[in-house]
Amino acid sequence: MKRRTFLARTLSVALVGASIAALPGCGFHLRGTGATQNLGIERLALAATPSALSDSVSRALRDAGIELSDAAPLRLNLGEERIQEIDLSGGNSGTHEIELQLEAPFSVQRTADNAYLLDQQQVQVATTFRANDDELLTRDDDREQALEALRRDAAQRLIDRLSNLDAAR
Image 1 (tube, one colour):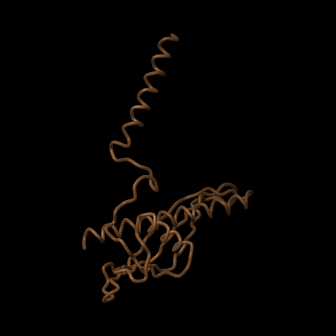
Image 2 (image 1 turned 90 degrees about the horizontal axis):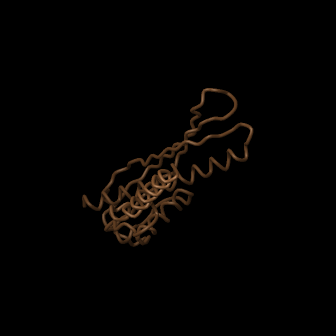
Image 3 (image 1 turned 90 degrees about the vertical axis):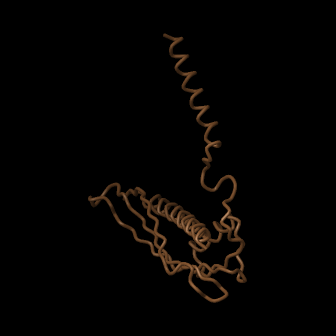
């Protein structure tokens, strides 16, 4: 019986090791790691009011290898973010499941003639988190962490749309 257990464990460890070793070969990588994606856009102007979302978008653009410059041929117009909080739980007390939705308008223009390459669109992302009525400080921390994650996801979706724009140009 001990030998059978040893063989089963050894086989399962070998399979897990082989699958982990095969992941990079298939092109899998975690978001935010590895080589930056080539969008074909070298410079971009960002027109946005200073906010946490515009900071996340700026950071994501720089991480994607895009230089932010007012003299760039394209301008990303980013509007104000709107946050909606929806309580998904039916009860009045205890633990609540809360959905946070972030929505922000954006458009892309050529700076030379102000022609819209992408007319005003919305980027929308959502997430949920659990909050306990008895732990108000933890609830605020969890909400802020969820908002930060939403802003990073929104920035990544904007970059994805910019990469589609480049392919269509």
